[in-house]
Length: 212
Image (cartoon, rainbow, N blue to C red):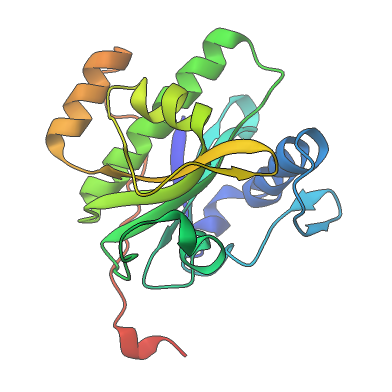
């Protein structure tokens, strides 16, 4: 089952966040050798903040099997800080535009379950977005992720600039628009008609003056 977890409700989920960071360590540090901070077998970086919302897919016994990280663009975010040259247009700074990063699914799971988790994470993006008046998500992802996750789901994606090589992988900055129509397309394409997000996790926009 898919859950939206942030600083406000993390206490309800026991050790889920440490599990999430350990899954990311296995995926991004051990398997892909990302140059990222690690601690005690957990991967993290400066974009794991108090404003972050995690979409987390929990299996039996509350085991983390998949996840993604969401951050509002009126806070520091990866595309703007690290790769602004990958976009040919001004980058957003808005509580209604969020960045999606760190999509991760447990590699050892059966293929059918991995597919189900992938589609539920995509649907979770849309359900969380609609529940929180988010108009679109942006991100920097390898081309195969854009193709096999967002485009293959029926959602579609628009690239923001030219292809670049990051750590030898073909990569684009891109965006996906949030709308009820997009949700219906993804549900139709994936065959998952019921809501997947167990708790939409309402996030009230914070005024810019609160940023210090």
